[in-house]
Length: 166
Image (cartoon, rainbow, N blue to C red; front, side, top):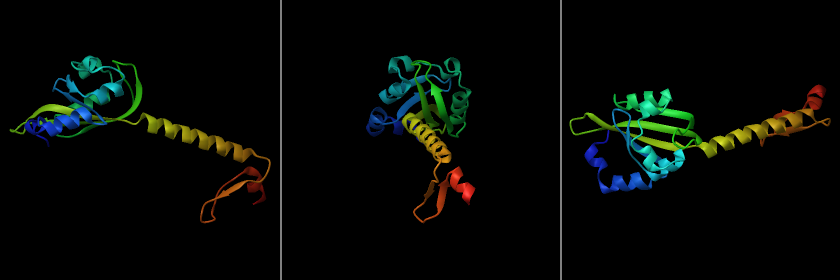
């Protein structure tokens, strides 16, 4: 677990400000006290609108509430899935990890969350599945015999016409 003093060093500040991931700090009450620009971009809003936001009161998503609570009992909370930003209205597919930050007495004094925007990956996966389904439908319904083999020569797909002959 990280200590608050270590977090204040220049190295950690640089990582916080220039990370390719969204990062924000929050209190026990769920209030965002700091965030980097990348987090604001992911949320489709500004840092000013995010800082001071009370996640328990203003966010209806119970997954986030549960993740914050886990962070303050020494576990890490995870939120994975579709999310719509309440401050920016932006819809995204996110993976967010919540952790507690301890002071020298090992008391949880703050929380930190790391947000990875997986929207492009999620959309690409959906498009690939749609394309796969379309190709499979076309192939299955062609009047000619059609099949596909893998690199080892094993059949991996065929259409109704070929299946009728086998």
